[in-house]
Amino acid sequence: MADDPHSGQRWIRALHPRGSLGAGAIWLIIALAVTFSVSAAIWVGSIARANVLEQHVRRLSLETDQMSAELGQALTARLDAIEAAARILRAADRPITPRKIFTELTAAYPELDWIAVAASDGIIRGTNGGPAEGSNAASSRWFSSGASGPWLGLITVVPARENTAQLGDMAAPVRDGAGRVVAVIAAHLSWRRAPHHPERLTDESDPRGAQAYVLDRQGIVLVGPDELRDRPWAGVASDIKSPAAADTARFERLPDGREVLVSREPLSAGADVSSLGWQVQLCEPLGRVYQRADALAFKILWVSMGLGVATCLLGAIGARRLTARLERLTESVAAVGHNDAEHIDVPGGVDEAARLARAFAKILDDLHQERRELRTLSSELERRVAVRTREVERLAEESRFAAIVRERLKIARDLHDTLAHSMMAILSEIRFLRKLQARDPGAVPDELARAEQVAHEGLKEARSAITQMRVNAVRETGLGPALSNEFERFVNRTGLSGEFGADPAAARFGDERAETILRMAQEALRNVERHSKATRVNVELLAADGGELELRIEDDGVGFDPDEPRTAHYGLVGLREQADLIGAQLRIVSSPGHGTRIRVTLQTAPAAFVL
Image 1 (cartoon, rainbow, N blue to C red):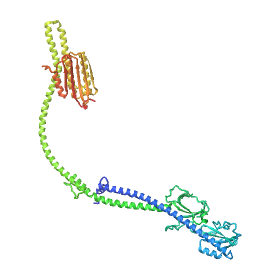
Image 2 (image 1 turned 180 degrees about the vertical axis):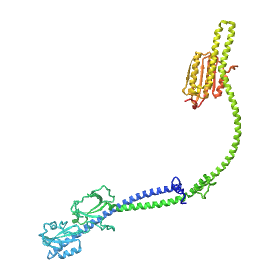
Image 3 (image 1 turned 90 degrees about the vertical axis):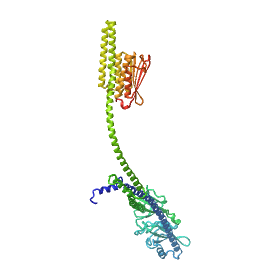
Image 4 (image 1 turned 90 degrees about the horizontal axis):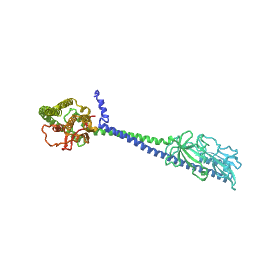
């Protein structure tokens, strides 16, 4: 089987859609499955990608809102703690004894890096790591602002700590019983969760995730990376369309060309915090924004392709099983067609393959029956052909005899048209000479000359008739030119006036029937010359619709009665015989004293005209 040189060709035929109906069905299933799988993957993937992106943007907005609320509450709580510390210091017997308060505050709020108290003259009277004790803070913003009431702001000069960012420095006045400001207490707050904010609403903890910023009302970065701090936020609106769910988020392009998703929310807390106009901003790179959406779309694509492959396999197996019966029927029919089998194998069942097999089997049986009948008929036909052959041979012999008879009749007509007329003319001259010899001998020489001329004319006509028998000018030039030449000779010979006309289509007529029509025209013109005593003759050759040809010859002679019998005159008889010979209709209209009109009508075919 492995050495079979035709096995590869059979496999190719089995897989070629034009060589196998099953292969065509399999390829159709594969094409549909792949098309639907890819289309569904693209469509569902785009929907899932849009939904995931929308969820991601909504989640970032919620995180920003949550972070803004938490941050505002934290700042408000710390500011309230500082104000409470100021009230405690004011209520103490010795207003400036902060050590114990500082310890309690830093224990309650670890993000307070330091706390300091400055007297009304600005000299630091107590601190736990901030400005040096005894230093003068009168020029500091927190001292001047805190002396007039609770203050929240930024202290520009602070001890640097690793991975921290200053957030909200706060101060509050310390008043005595009379309400006078005797000191200012201040604290520095560091936000150790900046610049990255891993605490998300989900369980993600990627430090490369959303980057957190705090901006003031002018868009200056208060909290963020060192290279951006104290600088305006440089992002501009991007061309990327934000999802419909993004109320506070939008795509922006940074100066370095990166696309980021930015969500901003103002601090929402007490009046002192909200009055600052600060904003919390979360920023994510575009790649991370689309990461989950693209991953989900890619996963949907692979799942769809996998389902498509499974559909193709199941469809191929099903198509092979469905077309197996039809394939066996095809092989059986092919074997019968190559005479390798006598009958078609009809499978059981009532499906299309079984019905088709039964129909083929019936057709084959009918063909065998017809073949047997054809053999019987062929034998009978051979016998009849033998009988008909003998009959045809007999008829052929009779046909040859009939052809000889027709040729004799034709020669007789030609002799009548030429020699008979000439001999009658000579006979008339001889009779006239005999009478003239007895009555007027002096006129005999002139009449002899005339008789000689008549004999020459007869000889000329005999030679012309022989030439026409040997040469067929009608076949070469057509009936029109031949009739025109004959009419011209007639006019020159007789001196009569007349006209000749021929339609172009009729003039081209030139088969064997044209010769007969030409001879009929010659006979009619000779009759006009000898018997009609006419002064004018018209000849027309016309072609009517439907392939009908008509010859018209008219004269203004004495006329005659066509129905009167004439013995020993064969002119009209010859005309009628020639008309019957070619299947033409001859009509002669004449009466004494009213001239003669001859019509010859012949039904022809377009192929009979000479091109």
